[in-house]
Length: 454
Image (cartoon, rainbow, N blue to C red; front, side):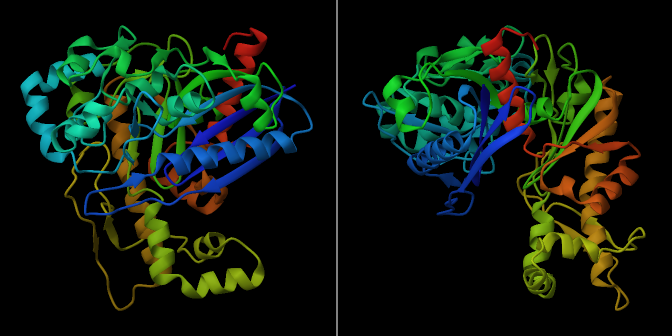
C-alpha cells in the first residue's frame, strides 16, 4: 500500500507517492501562472490550479507500483475562492502577497481591537490574511461576495472537487484569521462581523482527520482505486515541518524556497506581548496537542532568483552547457568569507517581525573592488540575519530552537546551508526527502488509514 501527499503552492502543485516506510515511489509536478493585473494584486485562477492538481494526482497514482490508499493535502495559506451553490468559481484567488486589502486592515482591526484579535486568532493584522481579503471583497466586489455560497481555501477546494464535503486542517484554518486557535473552531464574533456564518467556510478538523472517501467515478478518472481516504493536512509550512521530522520542542524546520521560513513545534500556545509586538503568530501544528509559529522573509529565495536573472547570465549559459542546475553554478561562485557589503533584504514587503508592505531594500558599502561573488554572499547574509533576528525574538518568548532541519530547494546547497548555520550559530541538518510537505501529509494519511497515532 502507498500514500500520496499533495502540495498546492503559489506557483505550482505536486503529488508524491510514498510507501509505508516513507520511500518515494512516484511523483508529478505542474506549474501554473500567477496573474498580477494591477499593482498590489496577485491572483491564481482556481480552475487552472484544480486542473493541474488533478493532473499530478493522476500521473503520480498511475506511476506508483503500489495502490494508493490515502491522500493528504498541504496548501498555501490565506488564498480563497468564492464558490456559488452550483459549484462555480466566482473570482480568482488572492494569494498571500496580494496587498490590495491594506487599507481595510488597519481600520477594521482597530475597530475590533488588535490585541483582542490576536488573543482569538493568534495572528496580528496583515492584508495577507483571508479575513481582510474577504472584507476587501465585500467592500469592492459586493456582487461576488453576495453570490458566493462558500469561500474555500485550496485544501478544501480540492476536496470539494474530489466530491467531498470540504474540510481543512486546523493549521490552515488558523491562517485565515477567522479561527479561534484556543478553542479550535471558527470565531463566531469575527465570522459574523464579516457578514458570514460558519456554513460559509469549510469544516475545520484536526490535521490527520479523515475528511471523506473519494467517490468511485472520480477515483477511476484519477487512476486511483476505490475507497481512497482523504485526510486533512493544513498550511504548507507546518506540513513541511512534520515531513522534516520536527516532532518535539527545540527542533524547527528551515524552509528555503520563494519564501524563507522557520517553523518550530511547542506544546502549548504562546500569546506573549513579545510575539504580538513582533507579528509572530501562534497556531495549531500538525501533531496533536502541539502548536507552531512561522518566522519568515517574503524576500527569501526570491533574492537569489533576482541575482540570477540580473547578474547570472554567464553562469546560466555555462550551467546549460554542462547540464547542471544554474543555481549550483551561481552559488559555486559565492565568496567564501563574510562580505564587506551590507544588504537590507526587503526586496519585497517584509515578513516577520515588521509586516511592512512599503519597505524597500538597500545594498550598502559597494566599492569598485566589490566582486560579484561578494555581493551574492551579502544578499544571502542579509536574509539570514533577518532570520536570526526572528529566532532571537522567539527564544526571548520561551520558544527554544536548538536545531534546524533544512528543506526546500536551498537545502541542496551545502554552501548556502553552511552560511545560514554560521549566521544563526545553530546546527542545520538536511533531510533525505526534500519534498517534506508532501511527506508530512502522506504520513498523516498513513496514520489515519492504519490507525497508528502520530
